Amino acid sequence: MLCALVAIVLAFAGETAFGQNCGCASNLCCSRFGFCGVGDPYCGEGCQSGPCYGSSSGGSVANIVTDAFFNGIANGAGGGCAGRGFYTRSAFLNAAGSYPGFASGSSDVAKREVAAFFANVAHETGSLCYIEEINGASHNYCQASAQYPCASGKTYYGRGPLQLTWNYNYIAAGQSIRFDGLNNPDIVARDNVISFKTALWFWMNNCHNAITSGQGFGATIRAINSIECNGGNTPAVNSRVQYYRNYCSQLGVDPGPNLSC
Image (cartoon, rainbow, N blue to C red; front, side, top):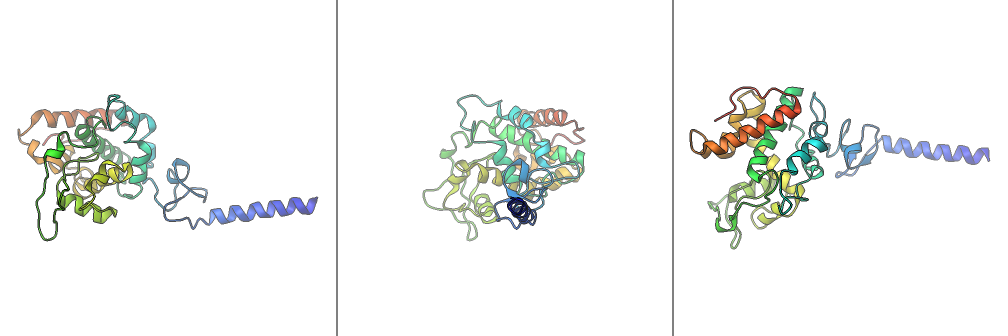
């Protein structure tokens, strides 16, 4: 009986040691305790490797983008919105795991970046209501070149949290994220993780440095839609700024200077 008990203990110990060594598959996170899996317990705080949710000196992205924070935005969408059930916190955190630089600064810088990202997302999507641009199918947004062609029958109107637009953005995002942006732009409105990844891809390439270097929230507006700036669409700018102030307040951080563009 004692031998059997020892064997069980040793077997469990061997399994634990294996888990603590991790060596997880590429799509799994190594938790703070050394086990493979997905979700907050594995990819959240203390995640050692794999598609972790991202971290900053102020805490993991998952700790900043809480259920309450995310759902507070998503609940602004009406019951008939296409985005309800499509845009989820889980999908966002999964996508954020591919961009560890997102919200990677000090506590205040990380919180401002989260607030800035979601302020623009809330404006672009009507608080996570819209997956696709309204009447987008009537616009092709094709600016063809040898590097960035356009596929016959495909349209490159706004899709996703930051309304990815134009063929060159779809192709470049697809090459980075590994989807066929040229021939399958619709996947941005069909796969919620890819959808959030396109938004984070655009953000990290065009907005991240602006908000983290102290240029202010207004610089992110200019990067996303410069036409709104300098009186081009003051109500839209004010909408973005209002969302940003609100989210900064929720996260307990000062919004900083240069809010408008």
